[in-house]
Each structure stands twice: as C-alpha cells, then as structure tokens.
Image (cartoon, rainbow, N blue to C red; front, side, top):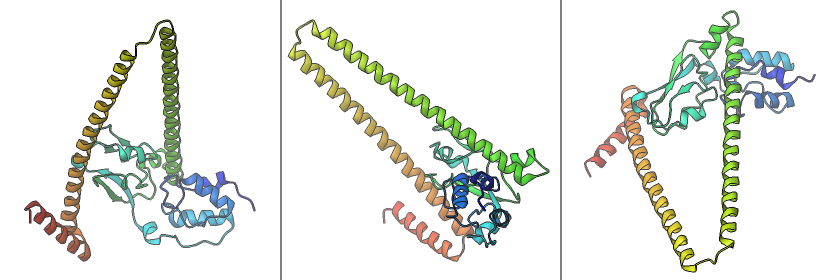
Length: 279
C-alpha cells in the first residue's frame, strides 16, 4: 500500500528537532513514504507516534531508537540571561522563532512557543542555555492551549504553522537581500560607465591615476586593519565568556554531577586556579 508523505507527516509532532537524523519532519516523512527510514526514529513522538506510523504504514511496531530519550520528560529551553552575550546564534537555530533578542542584547525564550527541539543548545558559544524538564506530554504549550480537546494535534499544528511562517520570512529576507545586491551592482556598473564617458573626452593624467590607485589601496588597508582589530577584540570577548561558561559548568558539576563529572570538574578547577596563579 502506498501512503503519501503528507499523510505520514500529519502524524509527526512537527518539532523539527532533527533527532530522527533528517533535517525536519517533512524529510523524515518523505523517507518513510519511500520506505528508506525506520518508523521508530521520532524521539519526541515516542511510542504514540511509532504505533500510529505502524498502523498507517502497516508495519510492525518497534521500540524507540533512543528509548531513554523518548522516555525522558519533555524539556523547554531557558537562557541564563546574565551569561548571554547577545550573539543571536540561538535565534538563528530556533525553527519556530521562539527566541527573542537582538545582536549584543540579552535573549529570552518564549516558553509557551518552545517545542523543546534542543537545536539552540549546540551553537551557543558560552553554554548559557539550559533545558528544563517539564511535565507536558506535548509541546509547544501555546498549541496545546489552542486545542485542549486534542492537545497532540493542537501542538503539532501550531508548531508547523510557526515553522512555515519562519521559512516564509527567511525566504522574503533572502529575496530582499538579493534585490538590494542586484541594485548595487547595477548602480556600480552605471557609475563605471559614466566615468568612462567622462574620461573619454579628456586626456588622462598618469600621475593622477597613480595617486587615486594609492589612495584606494590605503583606504582598503585601513579598512582591513580596522576589521582585524574589531575581530580580535570580539574574539577576546568570546574567549572570556567561554572561560566563564566552563567555570560555571565545573562549579555545577562539583555540586550536582555524578562521580566521574565531579572528579573531572575538580581536576579542571585545580588546573584553572593554577593557571590564574601562574603556576
């Protein structure tokens, strides 16, 4: 029996978390429709989605590929605001635009919009995003609230709508950027043509041309140096924040970690203190 990818995708939770190994729910659904993917890869869906897929595709149910993860509570991301450096890496990673913030400004997760996809955690350069376990069966909470009679469907539909709106926004931004670049290229070509027409009626002065070329080269060198200095400063700031994040992790592991984590944290703290003391 042939089942459409759209029908399969309708059963998925639409978190776009990529924990199945695919780039989102739609690609996973397409792979299932093609018969090239197992039915037990959707970690957020757990046993519920596995059994629904098994029924739809007429396959035998399987245990979750990551049983421990599937059985664990759902999570919602939370940004440690005092440690946030405003890099926007998490905003770019969030598939449903559930994070507010701007460059160099503190970011914040909209908890009711968060799907618990965890995609914001890896790109954070200072490890300031925590995953807080919650008792919710389905996320995002705003979708559940919108359809209390069918919370699973409400959550999935809401998350998918947020994801599609984000994709549309990114497409519009890319198109606008391409239009601006095309306009700049056209203006530059027009200025170059006008300059040729202006110079064609007079004899070019070699000394003047050399001076103009040197001035342009000097301006480019100054700009490159300024950019390099700015990048060095930003890199130093990032390194300091990463060191602070490592210190926070070590202090947390000493207090709350398992035996191996506490041992590793103590060793790191000793090395860190020795480095600070110049030993």
